[in-house]
Amino acid sequence: MILYSSWYNYLTTSILHTPSILILHQHLISTHRSIMSEKESSLREIASTLCKRVDIGTAILPKPLFSEWETLDGTKTEIENATLACHDPDISITSCSQETQYASIVASEFNAIVIEHHLKWAPLCQALPGPINANTPSLRLGRYDFAHCDAMVDWAIAKGMKVKGHVLCWHVTTPDFVEEMSSERIREELKRHIYTTMAHFRGRIKMWDVVNESLAPDGTLANNIFLRKLGPIYIEDCFKWAHDADPSSFLIYNDNKVEGMNGPNKEKADGFYRLLKDLVDRGVPIHGAGMQAHFNAGGVGDRQRVPTPLQVKNQIRRIGDLGLKVNISEMDVRVSKLKASAEVKTLAQRQIYHDIIAAALSEEAFDGVWLWGFSDRHVSAIPLSFFYNIAICSQQAS
Image (cartoon, rainbow, N blue to C red; front, side):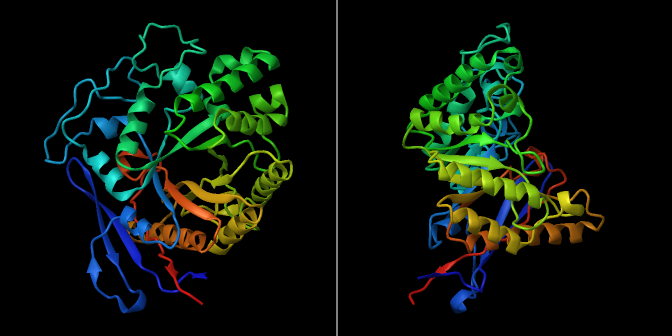
């Protein structure tokens, strides 16, 4: 029988600010079973000691991965033809002779990555043309540019990391010209997009966020382009198309403010559960649920408060009872609204990370946590001083 220890092994991770880089420094303090010595260890190493396989992932961006402001030997450089910035219209990807600081941290601390932006529909076909000539018309439906994504995916696989695909269907990052299409055309193009993207990465990306944020705050389906044009069936169809495109892929539904049962955002959390249950009950090929966990330590009221660890635990448990795995998919903890000293902000942020992840790890259905960036320089949750603890489970025989 697997038991989760009431003792915690703490991994305290801090970012040290130097003039030009952010350095991740980690200490593993082992307190369980009279192990009192301190040793250095990484998140990735700690994850490998858990009593079950857990993804410790982060969202990544191409520019800092391949063209950092400083390399490991301290040399400031801008690697020619590898800038890969979000707005770069015409680049040629070349291999880097030196590993960037950002890349080194990702490879040492995490066992999984998710591409933050470039794998979404509009970036692939419209907004981020990459090496395709910048003068190409923006209506490029059917003409996909996977250059940025291929570089990131291949880099991660070479480092022995899992890659999660994000995301196949999200109304926010759908090409704007789709709005003018007929319902029949949208259905055809959405299906083709899923087939094209998954086929390109088949064998390399084995888990996908299929549909993202289809729920309104009250737990009903959001009034987005897909609901208006295709009706509620679009969610089921997307999962079926994804399964057809790659029957071996692990398919996930992902949403925000759904993390706590009977907590803040109760209506949406309940709607999240009902949607998942309906899909499972009708035999739709869905295997997991992602709870984003964009939290604000200073949030108040029914919409902005952070759920309690017990509320998160109970939400994971009831979804797990449906036969689904659950991951925390985009975790960050903002402190900008917390009226307190920097020290108190850090302590609050650290406690939220620790308590939520510790509660999640205690549930059998929980299979990983993914951070929505790990550095102040590359995340939207500014100011973010990235401090957190992870509880370690132990295995005992009853």
